[in-house]
Length: 513
Image (cartoon, rainbow, N blue to C red; front, side, top):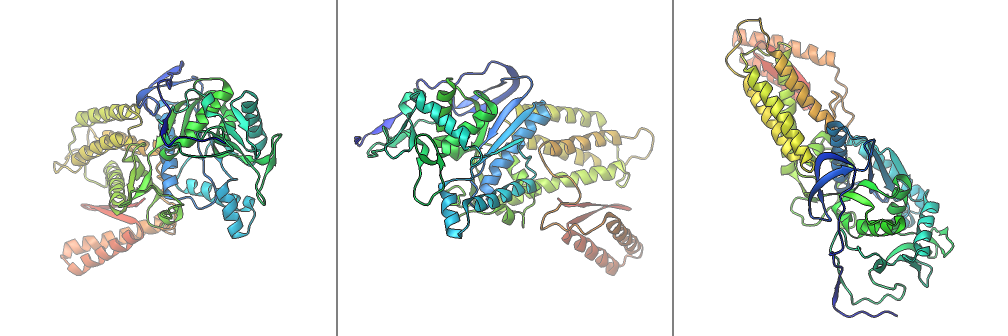
C-alpha cells in the first residue's frame, strides 16, 4: 500500500520542450500552450494537414458551450482552407460508451446504445444547423475497441503501463519524463490508492463492474478509459505525427496532457501533436463557472435557435479571439446581431446602388479601391496572427463604413458616362466572400424555427410595388393616412423578417438573416 506525505508534488517543465516541425512554412503564427507564446505554423506535408478534434460524449443534448467550440474550430478550419489554401483532412471521435452514458441509460431504462445513438444524431443535426462542416472522418469508441486494446497492449509490453490487482490498466506517468508538457501539474499528494503505483497514474482500461457493458482483453474484461480512446483512434487515422489537435480549454488537462504522454510513448517520439488549439469557454453573463451539464446551467442548441440565428451566434464567436472566453448574454447577443445587421444592410444598399435603385453619386474610386486592397491585406495579416478574427471584423467594418459614406453622399452624379458601379460591385463581392469564407449562411430562405419561409419573392415584390404606389400618392397628396398605411405594410413585413429601404423614388428589400 502506497502512502504519500501531505506536501504537494510538482512536475517540472524544464525538460518539456516544443520542437518546431520541419516542413512547409505557412506564414501563420499560432499560440502554443507549451511555450506560452505564438510560434510559427509549419506543416508536415505540402499535400495536406491533419486535424483531429475531440468530439462529444453523447449522453445529453448539445449545449451552446460545446457549440461555441465547434463553431470556432469550424471558423479556423475555413480560414486555413479558404485564405491559405491548406488541404485539411479532419477527424472527430464520438465517445458513445462512458460512465455518464451508462448511468443515464439506466435512469431512462434504455440500452446504452439506444441512448448514445439518439444524442449522437442530435449532435450532428445541431452542427448542421450551425453550418459547421462535418469532419471528413467520424469514428466511434464502441466500434474501435480492438484497436484501443491493441494500443494498450503495446504500452503494457513496453513498460509504460501496468495491470493493477483488479484488472484495470494504468499508464505509468513516471516513465515519461515530459509529463506536464501542457500544464505545470500540482496535486494534493495525501492520497492512498492501493491499485496504482502513483497517484499521477491514470486509467487506460477500467475493469468491469457488475451490470455494466464490457469487452474482453487478455488482462481482464472491461472498457477503455477516456484518454486512451482519442490517442488510439487519432493514431489509427493519422499515425505518429498530427498537425493540429483541437478542443475546449477545459480539455488541456488532464485529457490532452494524458493523450500526448501515452501517444509519445506508443510511437516512441518526443512530440505527437505539433499544434494544440484550445478554445475559450462560454459562460453565461453574471456567472463565473463555464457552461456545464453537471452544473445544470446549460442552454441547448435548440433553445438558442429559437431566439438567435446561426449567423448571429457565429458572429458572436468571430468577435473575440478563439482562445478567449465568451460572455453570453443579452448585451453580447445584441452586439453580434447589430454587427451582422450592419453588414447585411450595407450589402443591400450596395446592391441597390449597383442596380440603379439607389441614385448614383460621384465617388472617389481610387480611394475606395486602395481601401479595399488595404483591407484585404489587413485581414490576411489578422488571420496570420493566430487567426485574429476580431481584428478582421474590425477592418471589414471600417471598409463598409467608408463605402457607405461614399454611396450615401449628397453629391449626386448627373451624367451616365463613366459609371462607377464597378468599384461598389468589387467591394460588395469582397464582403460577400468574407462571409462565405468564414461560414455564414447567405441563402435568402433559411430553415430555422424563427424564420418564415412561406414568403415567395414574387409575392413580396408585388406587395412592395403596391406599397410604393401608395407611397407616391401619399407624397403627391401629402396624405398622412396613406403614409400610415405604408408604415403598417413596412412593419408587417419586418415582423416576417423582410426589411424595406426607401431610396427616393425606389424601394429595395431583403430578408433579414
